[in-house]
Length: 208
Image (tube, rainbow, N blue to C red):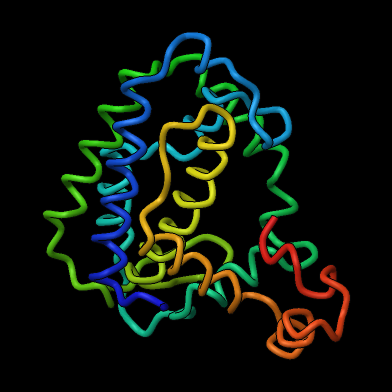
């Protein structure tokens, strides 16, 4: 179930609201609980995925003329995660940034940012096929950004649930994330792995 831009926005807004609800309930002990993301406690995990109002301003300022260089979220993730891609070359700096950002974030502030961003997303009227400049690939669309952000919000919400419980992604978010991740590896490799003809490491993990 690959979502179109409008549907992805709605499901992403719901995911951020789930993040908001759980963050508003986090105790001090839970905030410092280690997660299965190496080097991150819950605070760093939240800091990594937590949106803010400035993000929408940056997106608006990044609008460029079509056509977009990348119009498929699977292609975007594939390029990011290929050997030498940004997911590998920038992994260390992203991990360190999350830890640094967590030092100035509280559960209450995170809950507010998630809720406000979800509300802004629901009110957004920019067409899903709006083209924006985007690092590493040149340009892409708001639809691709929404679908990719939904995947990140969903995967990391599962990380949060594994650490402290009390939250789960929506069925729509899980289905959309599953179908996007399946589309990331080489199709032949993915089919052979899913059919038991090849070892899992031929196609998974699809993203870092």
